[in-house]
Length: 70
Image 1 (cartoon, helix red, strand yellow):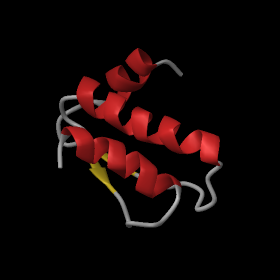
Image 2 (cartoon, helix red, strand yellow; image 1 turned 90 degrees about the horizontal axis):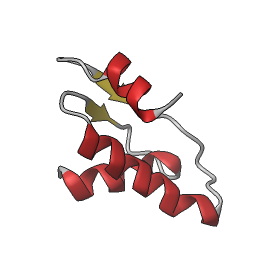
Image 3 (cartoon, rainbow, N blue to C red; image 1 turned 90 degrees about the vertical axis):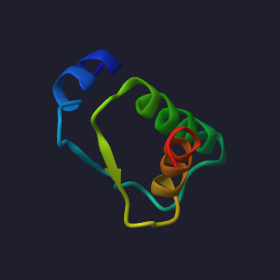
Image 4 (tube, rainbow, N blue to C red; image 1 turned 30 degrees about the vertical axis):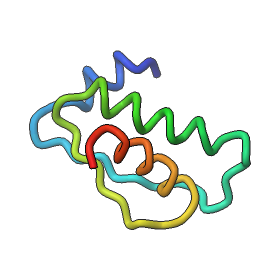
């Protein structure tokens, strides 16, 4: 799925993005998850991201989101 397809399907008023992922993240993937969280937050207008504050993928994606919108 491309970013534009994702946004056209899910970036609608009232949408909630629930973060769920692996706790064990490869070192090489940590910065990618931060970048993805940042990119989606910059490009979307309506998505509110929710996390259970779990370590791992949730933590890194959330860090990217927080860089744009704490």
